[in-house]
Image 1 (tube, rainbow, N blue to C red):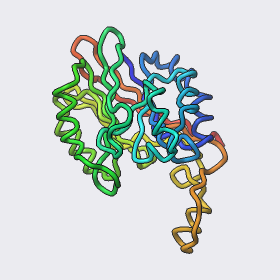
Image 2: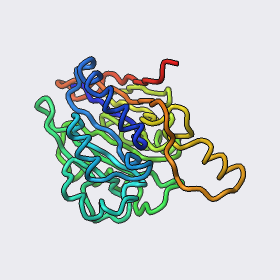
Image 3: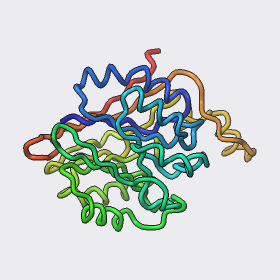
Image 4: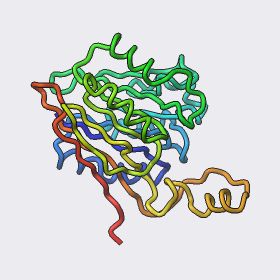
Length: 258
């Protein structure tokens, strides 16, 4: 089994580059299930049901979110219409939508789980450990795939090492910068951050001049996604269908040629 995961999609540039390359990646890598993090897909913060449907139409199977899950208030009422949209289990409000989606892939049940870290993130009511323990107790699956949306590197690594005996994949999202620490240990695959799909010449997908104006000069600004050519970041994970263990994780990065 081959799983494709694409990192945080930021704004229209991110959506455009995913749309441009997704089919090619799926064909070249012989992908069986495609997951992406869409929490920044709608103008840099949140997602809408319309964008959700667009991703489904181009071949995405499951969409995970993060701390900006409900930045677009529409999702509070429309998430019920998005059956393959997964929100962090420990993010408030906790009573809207799903935190786990189980898909049948290659004859196996794959559970896609979305959690938030607790360091530097707001509106997180439980630790990811409390939530993951509950998932392992309540959700019957062959493969457990976790998108841990968190800021701190050590928090992500600690989570993975705590669960690597029973979770086949932990991918980190949120920081938008792809890390080079992908590895497989004893059948569990990990990377601290998958990176983003967004504007290449930017600060984490955001307009760099706006960020400089705010951070350096103290000016009040609005969040504006950057324009220009796109960067696509993701990973491909191989799962042995007999042993139900990860055997390889490979980084993907497509950047402008100039």
